[in-house]
Amino acid sequence: MLPLNEFTDVLENFGKEVVKRAQKNLDRQKKNASGNLRESLAYSVTVDDNEFSMTFDAPNAPYWEFVNYGVKGKISDALAPTSPFKFGTGKADGGLTKGIREWINTKPIKQWKSNTSGRFLSYDQMATLISRKVYLYGIATSDFYTDAFVRTLKRYRPKMEEAYGEDYSEFLGNQFSQEINFEIVL
Image 1 (tube, one colour):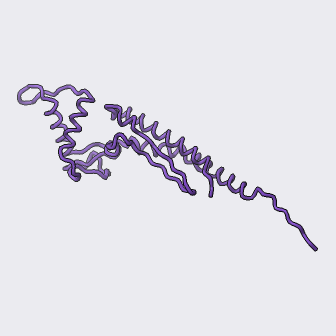
Image 2 (cartoon, rainbow, N blue to C red; image 1 turned 90 degrees about the vertical axis):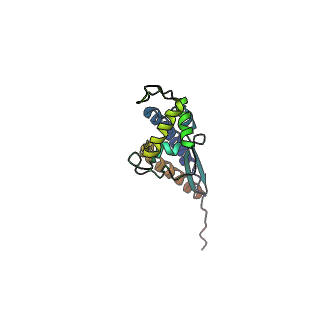
């Protein structure tokens, strides 16, 4: 079995860098209302029997994929044309309005005025209007995690190749390091 010690170290550093960049992307895009998504970003590296896997996730913010990939709207996919997600295909009933209402509490939004009466709308009314628009037109793609991964991979690919080569060289060196003694008998 080929021990991948150097390679594993590089993967760990790669994971930390991806998470750090993703957090910066969230901050820059102002997609971090409560801080829960930012703090939830995580990665895991598994190296076993000459194979490795790496997972990026946000365990305490399962909605991270919707923020990253966006969501196609019921009548338009212009905001997230390549997203695998679309409103109206799930089984949640009323979850969007509830989530938007909580988001309004977390991210203070100035109350809107009604066009007809001139009165301020309640936060529940605002949540209903926002939910309706999001449902119909979708959520824009942010690629906060995808972009962080792609940019970091460009920097780390040579490091990964070098580390794997070092592990392989060390493995071969250990395999053939025993002295070979032989006699010639005439």
